[in-house]
Length: 402
Image (cartoon, rainbow, N blue to C red; front, side, top):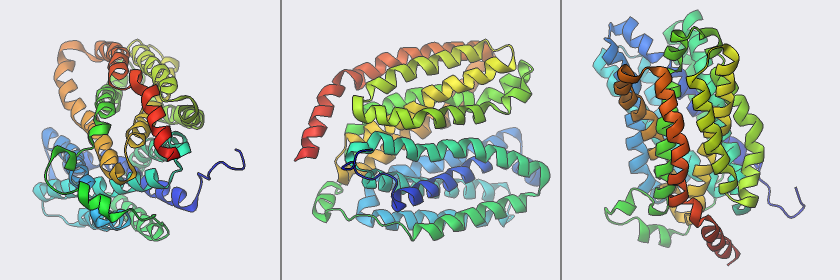
């Protein structure tokens, strides 16, 4: 790093990334345990248990949708505190036993608070990362969530086998309190209030989503829809092909691929542009899905996980970086929430839609179809962003230099 290059690993960047890691870890830890809790504690049906899991994501979507337009009028740090405080309160309410209906309500509220808190962390981190290191910085930031997607389910499954649900909820509560405590260390630079007020009045579409971020958000939705099949059905597929032991390491390998590649891909995006990362990522993601569809032994399954990590794992950070790079600083809150709304929609609604298809295709054919779809979505990316990237990069460079 040259002497004049702005610093990335500041105290604020590390603290905000750590908070994001904790929030995501709690989310995934509960995702793999809460359905079992609903069945064991309330004798929930399979559909009710599925709703207990999925309603969290619906709450998250709604939280993001509404906080994106209000975050700058409330204040970014204040929004983070509001989200964290209510996130902790919702975590504490898991100890209250008032039946399945109350559990569903609390899961929805818990998702709502995660949407608020994580939109705040994503917006704050986009603001404090130096403009010339946006791709690299957001790459490292999203790595905190990637690690949590591997560690959270592992801890959740381990604790569900060796401890009780009250201990699981207590663990989540302590983590939430720690994240609130360290949030006091974050310093957020102020924004110009005049610009904020002018752009947040009224109930136009642009009050809820950032129009500049919509094209890349649609690409995110498409690839997240495909990846949701891996998140939701990899265990069922592994049972079908007798590779359960290998499947338990799938997301560890996925996370390792992201950890190995993210430092290089983030820097490459800043220096050469998103196309140098995105087009290879489409190829790697598609190849990983096709390899997954034909996996006959553990090595092939884990190799597929590695390729998917190189592909989708880097797409996720690159598309988020594109969304905030295209947006003025005072609209970063909306850009961040717009990105995550489309990401969550793909991950949240994908399993339901694909679940209707699986009885007609089976898992192997589904992964083949989705692998081809991922490759085809590179054309969608080209028309929505890729062909205009050089022009947009020049515009951004000019505005940064002013």
